[in-house]
Image 1 (cartoon, rainbow, N blue to C red):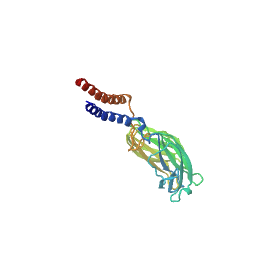
Image 2 (spheres, helix red, strand yellow):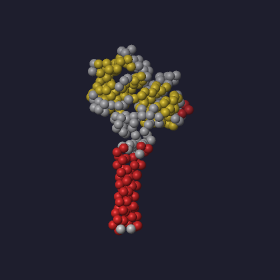
Image 3 (cartoon, rainbow, N blue to C red):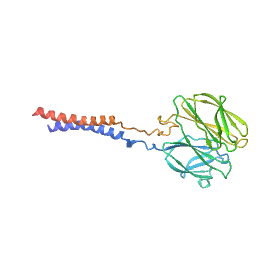
Image 4 (cartoon, rainbow, N blue to C red):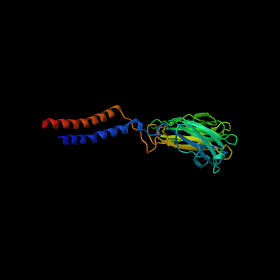
Amino acid sequence: MRRNALSACMKAVPAFLLALALVLWLLPGRQAAAQGNALVRVVHASPAAGNVDVFVDGGKLLSNFAFGTVTDYVSVAAGPHRIQVAPAGKGIDAAVINETVSVDADMAYTVAAIGDSASNLGLQAFVDNNQLSSGMAKVRVYHLSPNAGPVDIATGGKTVISGLTYKNASDYLSVPPGSYTFNVTATQANATVPVSATLQSGMVYSVFAVGLYKGTPALKFVVAAVSGVPGMPNTGSDPNALPQSASTTTVLPWVSGLIALGALGALGAGAWGIMARRRRSA
């Protein structure tokens, strides 16, 4: 009889251990370490800087970073970070920009290197909002041209952005997908440049005006696009995105209750079997 009781207990233990393992696996403490980070991308918009190396907290992030280039978003820890920008190949001690930028958890940022002379080089940070309504596209313009003056932007005969000045970004425009021509007018110079784009549903477009009006490097518009919305992990525009190797699972109260009942049931079944065998043998 002792052997039968031991055998019944041994059969119940694996089920209990499996249920316990499931509970531990689903505990909130297993949430990915990437949660709570910020997303940051970098734009080289300084006509005076040439190709540069970018260092963050003493480590090299970008090498030979060219004017007019926009990086993808990268995940960084929330808090202050020291950003240094040096001519390519010259090393961190030759940094021409040396600033600290603070970022908050679960936010997205664009950090632009700006300035058209050695005396006014610096960083300009923007908070991005990549939330997007279903079936729509969004557009935002970043004015990073130091001598273009205020600009107006019109499409379809309607002015949609007015008086946008240097080192500022427009509000987001939420528009249906389709083909558009945006006429960008430098109001002081009375010069208009058409920018054509086909906007897709579920995309967020950033238009960066960089360079010099009637100068070198010449004024141009750089377009960067990211897809996805918050709540859809592993997309470039999700401020809460997690790396592909990470995942987050939250235990719902009824799920944990069912698991606990399953564990108790497994033990109970073993105990009931032992008692039944004892009664039959009595």
